[in-house]
Length: 557
Image (tube, rainbow, N blue to C red):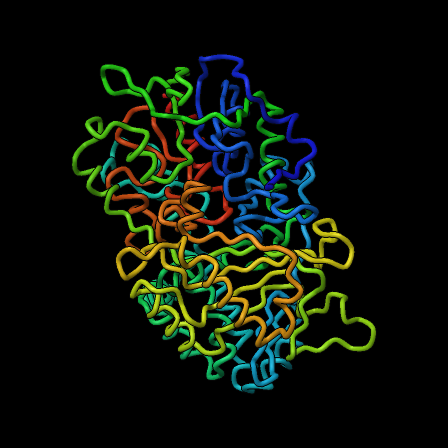
């Protein structure tokens, strides 16, 4: 039985509605919805957050899937959370803590070699030089180049996107133009290389910088993670950029384990929201968003039949769910609805959460002496398997593009209990696998994930056993989340973890669509605050903050 693990959660959430009238309603208590609610409550408005599950956090949640073992069920590492949100919502004061993963990356090879990368530039150079002295020299130059681009585009992540359709009437454009101008000024002579990075295949970029397969494949994984795309696909360079733009620790591109699991992020945000008067309700499912005769928003109707009034409603659901399930189609402009229905949700990932009775032992990084069950540096970060070359990743992609799970999938393993001993019994560990490719749409027709779930997980374990003999024998229990499970359990359309693919056709002023990009929608009083809006997916929080600011701005008009 799955259980929520948060001792203080009962103090934050409620089941019985205190009122049926609010200034604003937030649909969904994922991290973006909670962030939006916190900002709205801090502005002095009465806010209700309605969550259909019994757990807050959406995909940023900690659950005791296997008794005694606490997992970050979906999202499992933190980096993208915006520093301004961390500061403005007082998340550290509310108890948010993390463990720095250093080294942050480990790629073992079946022939016994390995690549270990971390914060120590000298050790990085030593490890890379085993494969290429040229690459060891170029790697810090590559990091500096990528870091300068990340720093340049940083202003775009905290501001709305330019809305060309409402150029003269949208006051947000002033802020958006200022942010874009700052970005262009910072890019300067790097503008052409930035353009190439976001439009080119990541394999092209990496081939220019490096020659060793292991370094290129390790870096290429960030260009495809969460997407049904190949390192050879145009635009995969932006996906890599998206995954190195985080800075929650103040160190660009550094990913951390949250102490107690990702649910602690959601709980700390909820604490700030509740502190300022927001009301959070679980087991409270919205049936549809309701409108006045002039099509302006007037509230929501629950599946229980209860009507709740509010002239501002923010949806943390995907655009497809919001406009396909919660809003009557006849209320929307036809061209807007056409664009909404054409959003790509190309989910391709499977998340497997595993309890083990000993820490995995890698052939490429053997333990010494009596430390056979103690965490080693290789256990601290993301462990890459089944992707020793860029072509390995591309081959796995081609199978998925044809509707079949990859025979030799790309596996990213994390072991947060290697640093956070609160997650598992002494000597035991929680292992999290993010696996590609697992296509949402299967072929031939009639094939289902119900048929393939267990065989695919077995195939994944077989790959791991090649790198880590005895891994399967150490497994106490496992929970498998296919793309279909992600959709059904968490409302993630198509199993796409970003609430819509992160291709260039679905970014900035085209996210979610070119008509009304960003938080606002054609319906007065309805806003999008989830990852399907600008600037996109990951536990970043910007869509929630930007949506809240749009609502506050509209209240002040």
